[in-house]
Image 1: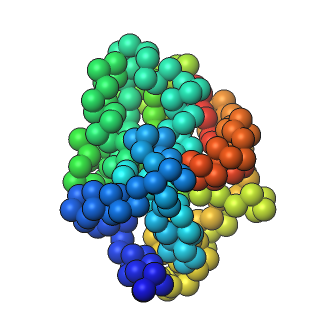
Image 2: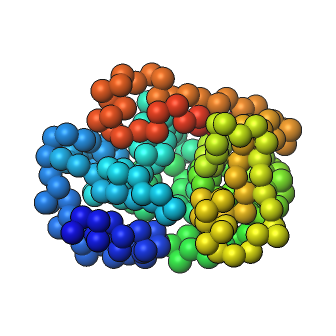
Length: 255
């Protein structure tokens, strides 16, 4: 039964899964209550998390309450503990492709002026192309753009636009899926079969697999980049408790 459940769960696109979650999420969260694992975003604990994945299923990674994945929880902990995001006054924040795990919480913050943007998302405040943003130069103090650039054919132009609208001394966190073992980013437009693209790029709608040169490319755009290994600050017990992606580097970019 568990294998059947996981099979159907991973057939559901994440946006649809999130919409369905408004109905089933409270029920699933109730039945999975426990004290083995904790989602730091809502502070709730469970006996286990749900499986998630496209080409390969990762066990125990999708938090039932917020539907956060490992990278979301890592980002949240970094944001809370290592930045002034929750305390700075009048912080202008631009959030690309806003994740449901964060959206409501960020909207409730009184210290930030919060704008969301996406080309297609129905929940975004501003419909915009990341390669041609309708915002003035130097207009945002904090930019969140996580797991977006791997979908963008001209990621150089997108990075230039992110740099342009970031204010001097501002911060942009630009997470992407990358492979530590890969030195050079790989892309191949000649691969058009959706299944083959999913196999090679991780998802059918990804246009590249980033390598470790991703951080260098951000620097070439003009950012000062810290590749923050934030899980190094956690014990093995806490990494497991929060189900964090051990060793994943967070691209913290300054202007």
